[in-house]
Length: 153
Ligand SMILES: Nc1ncnc2c1ncn2[C@@H]1O[C@H](COP(=O)(O)OP(=O)(O)OP(=O)(O)O)[C@@H](O)[C@H]1O
Ligand SMILES: [Mg+2]
Image (cartoon, rainbow, N blue to C red; front, top):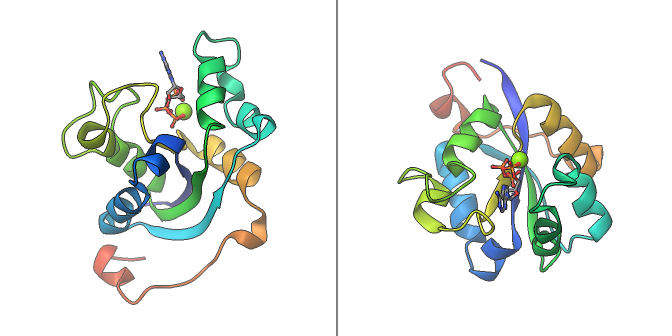
């Protein structure tokens, strides 16, 4: 079981709807560990770099406008298989198909307002963490409850 880090962002809709705490709380309750956080406005340049793979797609312009439309909560979360664990906690990209119990399945209805971003693989996670954070922004620490979350942390 690999300990991974994932870049997670509460998007502007999550901030505007007062769901930052709810989303953080779901990741905390899952057992994941917060290791970096930054509440911030997103420049067009940063947004375009983050969503570079979607450049040219019909939704790209709307996506960039949306993600720069208000502050976001940018974070790094750590844990065993964190990337997949976070993706499944978020639910599918389109909230219409997202299962109940997931963030998007419980709290969202529209693909263009799906509340949260999470890295989709180890390479993307590494790239996104480096794009949004400096290495010294990542805090390494242990938690007393870690052995109650993971058999062999
Ligand atoms: N067909 C679409 N119409 C409108 N918006 C879309 C569409 N497909 C994707 N998006 C938007 O672009 C974002 C990035 O799409 P992607 O395929 O990377 O999904 P994701 O990995 O689940 O989401 P994210 O990268 O934001 O975590 C989606 O979260 C969504 O907000
Ligand atoms: Mg994605």
